[in-house]
Length: 285
Image (cartoon, rainbow, N blue to C red; front, side, top):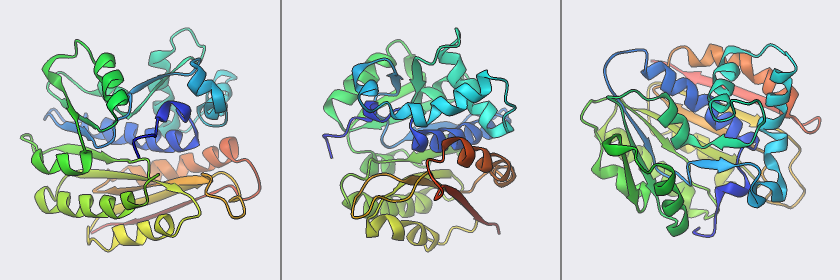
């Protein structure tokens, strides 16, 4: 829905899971000299001020990036996956105070090399303006698309370097986004089977959310990884966010072991009640 503004939720527990995984996908692709593209179907503003009134309204970052930030600042050793993610957040907060938070596009911007490219879609009329302002002066390395990312990625796949990570992460406020996500991944795999795809989805009390992982598995990709982080018991009869998941097609071979090490720490630091847990499953060819 076009009413959705991610600034109200920036740095929450769902962002932590999503961005910790995205950091690893980007790091893996940068280990080879060959260039690649980062493609984001729902980019949002790309960069967020945590001291802005929108972020402060619910202060969701205080139960997301906040506990990790404070634990690391207190000297607690972090698993490698979380430490790499925190390093990217530290880039925006060099004085040690947590005031800024990088969305997925900004994480990619910090990590990509001169030969790599960003292709960012955003349909919200206000968000695309903020995104454009945040990337002003970025040059030809970054191309912004004012439009529907579900439809737009069809025209840019496969990318010229034949290497890419595609993040599909709508807000899912519109329940049609679930079916569109499945269709977008199916179409993308037909165009670019060797691409790396990361689908983020919310854990809410909605049938479409529960069914999505099984639908993604049935698309037939030979290599995939599915991780979830539940932080609390679902509210009875409500649609509030109690966790989130990431479904990655063609994941780095290193990612499963990294998540096995990191997820218990996330459960401990971000869990809000006794229902907090994680799940991790994978299939390899």
